Image 1: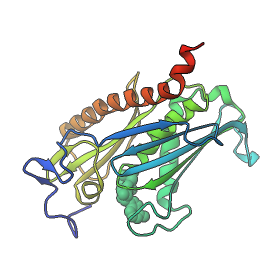
Image 2: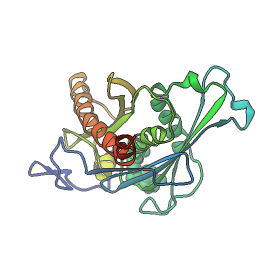
Image 3: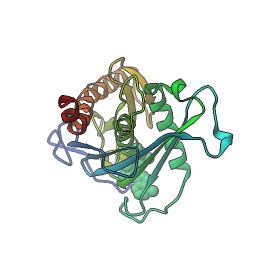
Length: 244
Ligand code: ADP
């Protein structure tokens, strides 16, 4: 964060550098069932951010030390393809990917009936194909529909977006220049039906009133995301249900 090396301004004539309004999300596309070899899968495109997610399970927990007799072992693995960033990204786990994998597991778990899968593992692999900010939130959106696609019993989907502040203005769904050179980045995830917040991180400083406004803005966008997630699931399962 901070302006060093970045564009002089992130808002010009009231518009963002990609032409969006402050409360406008990038175009989002969701496709379910993109990996036939997985039990469930999804791809989410959010502007230039692209993530693919595969879900495996419920299955035997390996290694056995991860077994939890009370609930599922939700094994989330977030990774970035070496070609996903403008400079080649070193493949393999990093501090950042380990942290993101953990917060994603915490964001998804409240949506899953974890006790139903006691002693079993649910594996969620999320690979960033192209990164342009908002990768953890795009990964959560993909993972939640991929879990549903795998037939994992859930109480809700999980909807997620990263908003923030740049050039002194609050804005929805940061893209890379705003994330890198803006003042605040605040990823959020919610269960859309109960509005329970399952992820809230913040990089930078906001007043209490600004934080409240930004959360409201993100929550509203999550309603849109929820509709897109349901539509994507219906695209795969809608016709099957109708013909039953
Ligand atoms: P998120 O992708 O969830 O917003 P960060 O705030 O950590 O997570 O990253 C913001 C953006 O910075 C990423 O989406 C990506 O565009 C860029 N970025 C992150 N890590 C790297 C990296 N190792 N190399 C190049 N760009 C990166």
